[in-house]
Every structure is written in C-alpha cells, then in structure tokens.
Length: 154
Ligand SMILES: [Zn+2]
Image 1 (cartoon, rainbow, N blue to C red):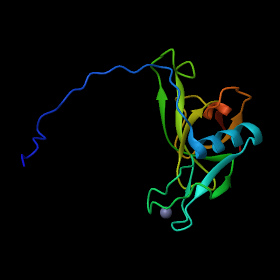
Image 2 (image 1 turned 90 degrees about the vertical axis):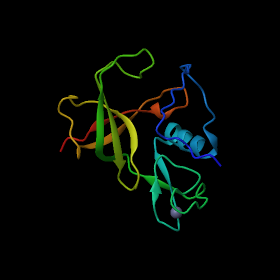
Image 3 (image 1 turned 180 degrees about the horizontal axis):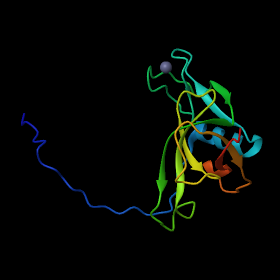
C-alpha cells in the first residue's frame, strides 16, 4: 500500500448555485413548523447524555443515540456566546451589511445556534449580551420565521 503524501495541497475548482433548496427532514420540519405555528423554539434531548441540542438533530453527537422524538421546549431568550460582523455585501444575504451574525446559546439549550442580531450597533456588540427572538410571518419555511434576535434591555 502506498503511503499518502499529505505535503501536497490539492485545489478543487467548483461552482455553487444560489439560492438552493433542500429537504429539511422529519426533525427539521417539526422544528420549523413549531417556529411558524407556535412561535416556539424546540430542541431535542439525549436521555443518556442529558444534552439538549438546538437546532434539533436526529442523533446525539456524543453517544449516537436516536433522539429524534425527545422534544423539549426552549426559551426564546439566551446569551450571545460569539459573533461576527458581516461587512461584504452580496445579493443572496438576508440583510444589508453591516449586520451581526451571532452564535446564541438559548436558555435551556446546551448547543448554540446561529442567527441575525439586530437592534444593537455592530461596533458595540459583545459576548454575553442577552437577546430574545423576534418572530415574523415569513411565508417560506426557513429559520427566518425568527426575523432576528434583539437585545433585552435591562
Ligand atoms: Zn448522547
């Protein structure tokens, strides 16, 4: 058997067609329809690890248990654990730049989800900011049933 040569770097040219569609699956579909119809965020819990995943998934990443039916309600609020400011404009982006894309750990969840954070100056966002979901009546099935997250003023 020939030993692989990892010192070489291969470049693969390709094209991505945007926008695109994909099948959300059973778990993803339940997550999206609950957002749309009940304005509620749901996660799934692994009964072995007790870890709660948001967005939900079929399989626990740790113990590989099937967790697709272990739905638990999650709070609409949480904490910004990381973020980036999108500055490069592109026609496929959901917002005019600059805008904040945050990694938000919702109260009750063990994993963070990515979403838009609005209502705060992109130059003033910090980790630890408390935010809550702002819903829309968006008609196409997507995570944009939540329009954005906004800071909770204390
Ligand atoms: Zn597990």
